[in-house]
Amino acid sequence: MSGMPVNDDRRDLLPHLFALYVMLALLVLGATHLPDKLGDPRLGAAAISMGFLGAWRYLWWLTHLVRAQIYARVVYPRLRARADARWQQGWRPRRVHFMMTTFREDVGITHAVLDSIVQQCREINCPATLYIGTGHPDDESVIQAYFAALEKPVQLDVTVIRQIYPGKRMAIGLVLRAMSRDGIGGDDPVIFMDGDTILANECATKCISIFGADPDCQALTTDERAIVRGPAWMQRWLDMRFAQRHMAMQSHALSRKVLTLTGRMSVFRAHSVVADEFISTIENDYLDHWLWGRFRFLSGDDKSSWYVLLRSGAQMLYVPDAVSYTVERVEGSGIERMKANLLRWSGNMLRNGARALALGPRRVGPFIWWCILDQRIATWSTVIGPIGAVAAALCISPWAIVAYLMWVLFVRVVASLVLFGYARKVDAWFPVLLYVNQLLNASLKLYIWFRLPQQRWSNRGDQRAALGSGAGARARLFVANGLTQLFLAVLAAFAVLYAQIV
Image (tube, rainbow, N blue to C red; front, side):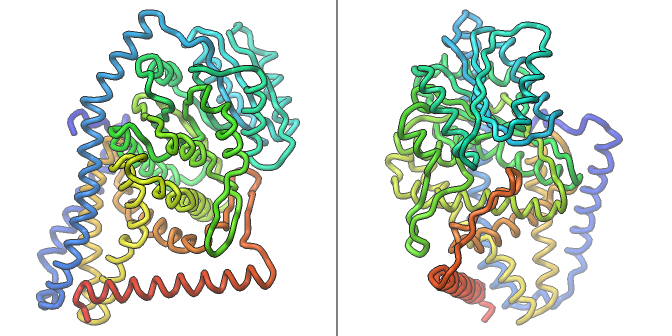
């Protein structure tokens, strides 16, 4: 990838380059000094069997990379040129609407978020309205004081809606109902954002201009980056995850669909968000499960909004040159916060994946439909490699696990060389974080697979939805535990037999 950006400070870049060089050197040295015991024909057969599975995953990843490059270098530049030309010719929407929710947010973060919204309004230079759903009187005091102290006037009307029901979903629903009462509609852009999202310069302009150039686009989302107030390793982890997201989103957008319209920063046409179906789904989305019955969704409002548009066949795009920053405040254990985030994201994916697949490839689109299916397959296929390696180490030679880890590190180093371009930085921790993230994410998905009602939102008042109590809940949990163990046993047996270890 030409023109790959690297760390701005060379004093920071050189240690990472040196660490990557040491990793590769150790891999080469280790490969040339592995013991002869690895020449066992059974290990060769296992390596070939696992190699086919790995080749399938790597080719799928390569497919995303190629599609992302086509979108970034061919498709999107043409759309960007049309949008910029229309904007320069004076096209503007009738009015721009910002929809934001906040709950006991840090004052400095709230000020930064409002600063970014005011800046967007100055850049757009057309009438705008900011609807803020608040969950606490202190939030309203901070907002009121901010706008009272604002010196330079801006074309922005501010409406505050007090939340009277718990949960972010109800807060969004109340704001959308207020917007509907105010009579917004048509193709006016509505920018959904969180109370900890800071919009980069021209973020709104780049998104809104797409609506002017592409009347078929009904919603879009942007590149996302993280600002972590917490452990340095969490900043690296989120940088790596958002680099993966940046690539995958561009691949998906080539099919004029995305896999989520993130609540941290997405833009919709007004007629979609004030529709009764849209609002009621945000407020009361639920799933009918064969084991747990009907249960409401706690988080995942972005998946609900995406599903409503997906079901209608709407076209959705990704704007790779528009950037929003999310401030992650980590209080307490970073490991626990990481697990909570992965559990929430994985649960949202699993809860929405089955019903999205049920729409069928004709409505969803063949490629996006397969991507949704692949997310579920990857939950199980990711752990086959480690299971096979452990089995080979126990049954054939302990050195099998060493060879496996060396191969894992080599593949993740190669993948990281690509991700550096999407992350706009070089970080020698990416190869390790890639594999740890894969294993932990797959493990949490396996855990939540039969426990979908279990939800927790640690960064919004630590909201929780438990599996319930009583004899009925205990019986269901017993079945869920048994099914998890059964599926893992079958998966382990498949891995061992497929690799021809036994």
